[in-house]
Image (cartoon, rainbow, N blue to C red):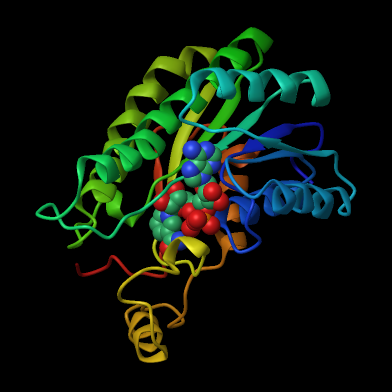
Length: 257
Ligand SMILES: NC(=O)c1ccc[n+]([C@@H]2O[C@H](COP(=O)([O-])OP(=O)(O)OC[C@H]3O[C@@H](n4cnc5c(N)ncnc54)[C@H](O)[C@@H]3O)[C@@H](O)[C@H]2O)c1
């Protein structure tokens, strides 16, 4: 229970299979009160908050679009109004499109850039402003991807935004160090969340078996809760001296590539 008394905000956490909810659960299990956010599925989001309350934590569902600066600011404001402060933010919301550069439309491109770049920047900005005002540090954790390091076909724009997070995290870590705010990112490899439901290479049971075979450790997908444990590491005292870092959480998927 190393996060007792801390308040966390996790974006992109409405779906029960999502990495965001895995993070919210892991943070709550460690004692944190948690705000779950999503742009979609308000009923599901409420349900996620109820599940955290059932763990004995304070929890709140706040619907907001992370690409909208006003909504992001309001989300942070409401977090502080209702739960008193903000110590940990998991900027996790993200979208993917499987479109090669030769086919992707400007509209699809813009949608990815808006959520995966602009959304992260806006959430980190609003959270950091609040943490600085509180005056006792904070923890920012971004969900990037193994695509921060690796290149795959058909996701060039998505991959570009995840690579960009690597630089963004380093720059922000430097900017916020004097305020004792750490900034780190995690790189999931393969999690069977809704994000992957439309993945062209995950449509049949043969596809899934092929994906599993590609994971050296355990031949299985990662679990959202396992991603959450890494967020707990960065958020807890174990992460006191860690900033600008990246943890791949991929069962070794990236090794040898
Ligand atoms: N699933 C994987 O294998 C995998 C691998 C690497 C990285 N990731 C990253 O993990 C993060 C979480 O994805 P996931 O796998 O849990 O997928 P998911 O689709 O279950 O969760 C993402 C959530 O973000 C929400 N969202 C989208 N746009 C938003 C916006 N504008 N404002 C607020 N919320 C918004 C969606 O509604 C969705 O609920 C993403 O950043 C994704 O890129 C996932």
